[in-house]
Amino acid sequence: MGNALRVLCRYCQRPTTADEPQVLAFYGLPYAPQTIEEDVKVTTIWPEVITPPWPEGVQFELLTLPVDKRAIGDGDGFTAYVNITEPRELKHMPQNVIDAIIMKENARDAKYFKLEKLIKKSVIASGYRFLKLPNQQKVLAHKYRIRLRLIMIITMKMSVQNNRGVDAPEIGMVYGDEATHVLVKMIQGKCLKIHVYNKDIYGRSVGDVYYNDIFIQEQLLKRGCVWHYVAYDRRPEFAKWQKEARDARRGLWLYQILRGKIIPIHLNTEEKPLFCSQILIQ
Image (cartoon, rainbow, N blue to C red):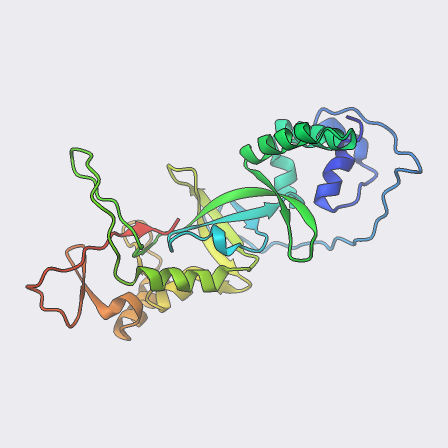
């Protein structure tokens, strides 16, 4: 247990410091003085990060690892992972996860590989994942389910419920595949910055998503992949970007929106239209 901080550092890829006893005490763990053989080589210089003021309502910021294409849903959300080296992650890591990581390392050192596998599953069940980055570096990361804040998209599938709770069959959606493809192309393999405002009833983090200085919601609106959810977000720039796409007939604006239904412009309004769901991007 005395090597707890060093075990975390192995996954964090961050050197120990002179404050090791205090850090261990913070997590309620005993301190064992480091021997010469256990000395950790400091090879990384960590620059000071100056964080600009966040927009009003932002609770915290996430800096993600590269987004895996397989973690992007049907255009309505994605899963992101944040390295535990981030200060907020280290501070909020549950004690049971810390203990499990230590036990996993001890099991591996003792060659109890079945036990190590079981402990690893418990860490994953707690919302963490052992990942290998493109540069082959192994890291421990925290899993987040992300919902883009306050815009709407046409999805590939739908499930309609009436008052009796009966589900209708899934059907193909107008422009759903194209919108999904745009979102995948924009964030796949990218390290994102996410300003989180709150969580929804499903436990998903609701926020604004950026890649470098590119605002993802802005790009989706301008390309006509989504529409502005005015009932919950009255940012004037959202309305402006949507108007630009609508005037230019981009993306979903090739179709008319009529009473919750999407109708191709060339289709006679008396013909039966395709019904499309309107779901918040997760």
